[in-house]
Image (cartoon, rainbow over all chains, first blue to last red; front, side):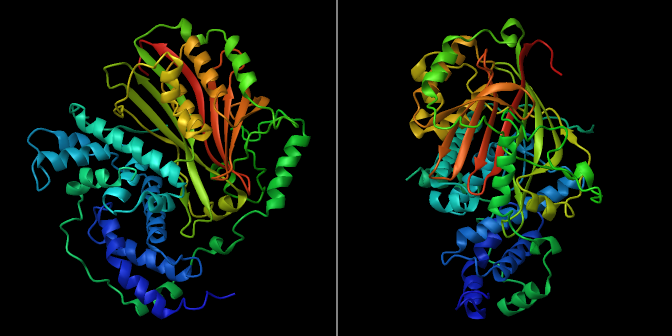
Amino acid sequence: MGPPPGRDEGWFTKVYDDHYQQILQYGRRRLADMDAPAELAQEVFAVAWRRRDEVPDRCLPWLYGVSRRLLANHWRARRAAGRQVPITDADVLREPGATGADATVGVADVRAALRSLSDLDQEILRLIGWEELTVAEAAQVLGCSRTTAAVRLHRARGRLIAAMAAPPTPPVPHRRLARS
Amino acid sequence: MFGEQRTRTLLGSADPARELPPESPRLSARELIAWADSTAEPVAARREGRLPRRMVLATGAIAVAAGAVVVLGSPDPPEVELDPADPSGVTAGRVLVPVAYRPGSAEVAAGPRLRALADGLVVAPYENSVGRFTYHHTKVWGDPVMTSPDGRFSVAFARESKVWWTPGGTGRQTTSEGVPEYPDQASRDYWVGLLAVTEAYSIDDLPQPPFDPVLPVDRAGLAGLLKTDLGAGVASVETSRIFGRYAVPRRTRAEILRVLADVPGFQWRGAVTDRAGRDGVAVTFDDRVHGTQHLLIFQARTGELLAWELVTLGPVRMSAYELILATDRTDHVG
């Protein structure tokens, strides 16, 4: 059984043209490596072509879902390889005298607070706040119900605001990576 | 709706990609199609996506027939009988199977049983301890889940955390990550050759997120904390969160059980043994809208929560679990 009628090169070209920049931005928001977002986008659209019989007509949340899974695998692979993924840069960003383009107090505080949250809290906030999805679309990306996504968003926003209001914590000198 | 716009206003200025210019794709659509077609997916991806439903049901039926109070997911030994020819062995991780109930335990409303349990609670061992720090030892599986690109095969690593916290302090957390665990055999087959399984490792000294150090004592306050207005599923998750964070005193435990007794939808499942081998009593809530089942296991005399589990129905497979392995008060960290 082949792909549904119409899922041909023309269909794919339109999906690619319509959504490439959005998937690229998704990667740019989550990956520090300059080349990695474009590689991620390429892989996402390759999956979309291979699985074209499964891609819904309104495909952006589906593409974000694939992006999220590929990215999770990327981080997991790094951890499995023994390279620790930085959990938070909050301490660095909150250090007095921090410099750089994002050192304006508001942006630094929001990013620091965001990075102090759990992965799931961060992701629902980013999907709504940066990818500008609706709660229903974010639920599709996260593989949960709309109600669950709404509750997660509500809680995550509350925790973000609480983290922004919390006094800066002293920087942690280093995190020990102990092998047991 | 749902505060979407408020979230965008809050986060918009912190968007790291906001000022970045658009970038043309490196490949045209045609070139990408050619690349996608020529790039082979992992061999395991072509295996059967899911266990046939009858096989999953057969597993459950065997468990029930075996006599009931069975933990099919106990950590040791592994549930999956390993193929002697399988070189990956136990380090490849186990396939999880939901906790089994007694046959015929279904369709018994949990309300009266939970109230009776609440009326007879005794003090928990940690209530005889003193110390500045509240201590919890928990084991969590199911968040985050790593899935294959097509979403069919899943794996997650069970994390064990030890947390010490005190009101006004930052506390300390030690988290170690163990071997992978899978919701079904097909996922294990898929991932076993792809994961570079390493030794467990730990991350120490994580700062604690801010939260209210004081639990409400009255029923209305507890109902609000448990979010009972959002239904039994959310209340189940919140119950797990509360018992995993606080050393809940006896009177408050009793009130929590009474609050849960008033939430529609919980079924009494009677005596079970949790994934860590501890005896308890269970209630479940079938969330038919989302096709999931929540399970809570309480210690039968103290009313402490021992475990929460989430199962996906149709086909039945584990989705997440939390075991609360220890609760205490202490003056010593570590």
